[in-house]
Amino acid sequence: MNFIKNYFQLDKYKTSIKVELTAGLITFISMSYILFVNPSVLGASGMNTGAVFTATALAAALGTAIMGIVANYPIGEAPALGINAFFSYTVCIGMHVKWQTALASVFVASILFILITLFKLREKIIDSIPADLKFAISSGIGLFIAFLGLQNGKLIVANKSTLVGLGSLHDPLVWITIFGLLVTVILMILNVPGAIFIGMVLAAVFGICTGQIALPHKIISTAPALIIVGVLMAQNTAHIHWNKLEIAVPAFLIILGMPLTYSISDGLSWGMITYPICMIAAKRGKEVTPMMSLLFVIFLIFLWVLNF
View 1 (tube, rainbow, N blue to C red):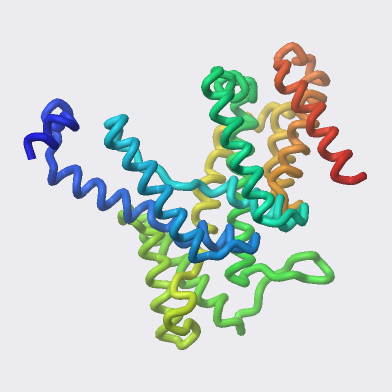
View 2 (view 1 turned 90 degrees about the vertical axis):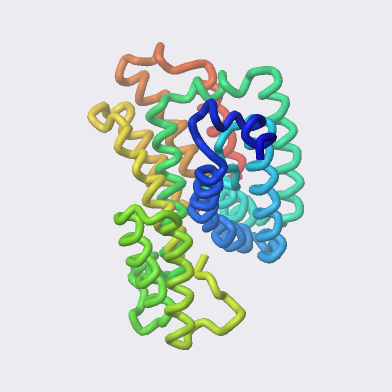
């Protein structure tokens, strides 16, 4: 016990083993929804959901352990929603790339990220993107993820006349999604720890009690959680300067483009291409960084390659 207290400097930070164990349990419950959502999103690419579940758990455990033991920092690490949606729906489904090939590209990308971090280029790239566009990107990904949740929960279905339409209340899955969504929202408003996870469990229990979910298959429904996470990410729209049209237009195109094109990269390209044009029109061209100018050219080439 003394070793643990000294190693983690518990007395210095005025805490105790009991407090840290409680905090760790609450953090785990709050984050554990990713164990079920991540397999659902990556499973759309053709990956084995059981394998993804295991990989998600191991990655989160390893990352959190390193943060705690090595960095002595109370931060939980786990896969985030956004890139996994890009992997499945943009690369694998949209570009028709096999998940094995896409996974290899992820490995290459990870090496590149390590290199740009070592050479301190990561901060320069991130800093070159305006804060408004960063908020728009996270918000757009949130809407895209929520759109996926609405589809998975059958609240939104394909419609020949209007592309998308409201799902049928005759579908039992719709009622399970509505029940899970309402329960999760109420728990979150009441500040209940692990509200998303509890909501998923209660939705599963509701489905089992109504005979719509057979044990042991599909115990957890991978839709209310996606919608709630989308809501949380979309809150970043509050930080965008909507009163400045040169900012509002590219930000809006990013946010709207991601769910409507069913592609994070396509929506991102809309904003990255229009941003320099709008800034120049507003006589603020000098504020466009060289990196943003480079991204303008890159996304133009991206759209050209994508279409031709």
